[in-house]
Image (tube, rainbow, N blue to C red):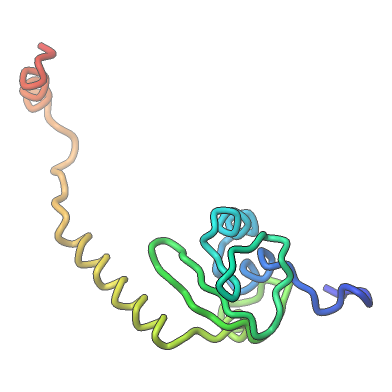
Length: 133
């Protein structure tokens, strides 16, 4: 996407987050910014904020925290390997996120799963217990 003189090198934050593949759509990136889940240099910002190289971003996506530094700007959504070149993630952030993922997996594994839909007999017993029948 060619930008004209004054707009050259300026990228909206929501567009950059989408191009860097942190969000599947620009709308999701916009909503995360509006809800304050993304901070730039420690400040809560709007989606129209212009991102610059060297900005520090802290994002909370699906219970996981990302701390990244903007290395390059892009308005095009490219393959994941190219998108990774747009930012550098803090190693401590990556370790903390990996630990959080392991915790979430362990929590999910220990959660008791139901046996599916109750049978007719089981529904009658539930109804009797609740006083419906």
